[in-house]
Image (cartoon, rainbow, N blue to C red):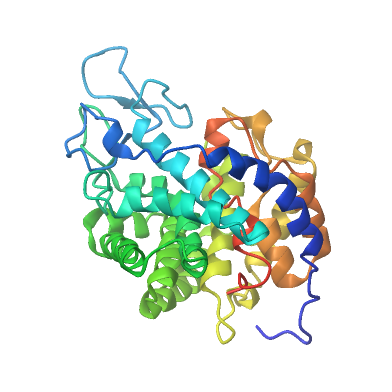
Length: 380
């Protein structure tokens, strides 16, 4: 779709000033944190080795009728007894590295960049501690399967570490050899996402899982310069994700049917908007793409906007868990506000909490550091 005039350019100066006040104290704390990878946490129930990421499916529980037998599903109800150490270790790194990189961009202090590089090298370079570039053993179900395609959603948080790598290179914190090795890791993981049975199954999932797969593919393809995969992401968004997942009113019917319809709707919109942010190019701008019936990413933002402003207006059942903890600072509002020059999106984004103490909310928020995405050198 063509527009008659370019969008109003949003002044990012006040946004970045506010980020500086938030980010630098957190980054100062992270200067004292040593790298910890999945190799520090043996996983006795994993079918893989010490370098293989392992997690267990959130919504599966022991069967009261057969406590020692295969687990059974309770959709939307998180089992706190499942193995979470690898997920938490990954999430820890995915908080530390982007925060330190954001602090580098906001302060030009090389200490932050060097500390971020230490964590990246531990995870993706050092033979003793690196993670293997696949998720064959993620979201296993006790007594049922050693790993599922759904586990791929566990690595959405790698998007911002991947986004950090060029900035850390520019800061001189990553050697050429280490940067090459890290890119090779992401290239190998990208290949696994696209070619493995689990990767293909996740790609073809019906709901937010397929959106998150495409979002990751776009992010990692952008890092390693795989234009073919980026083109494929744009095609998939226009021909599969948007037409199959968005209702005529901008809602996500597949998410509304779940036991956490509000949180999942926000999550899917964030993933779709992040995909638009990463994959769009001037000659194929996903922000301006509109289906023949009028559906677009902006339709989705405008549908959820009033319910982000006032959750009490939500017309569907409340989420079975974490209802009180949403919403938080949605990247869809930030990215759409920048793309469309729409101050009301940005204003609402600024009013929402930047962080949450609730682990489940943290796990569903892959984009946390605006300084990696806006401002000089971060518009591409």
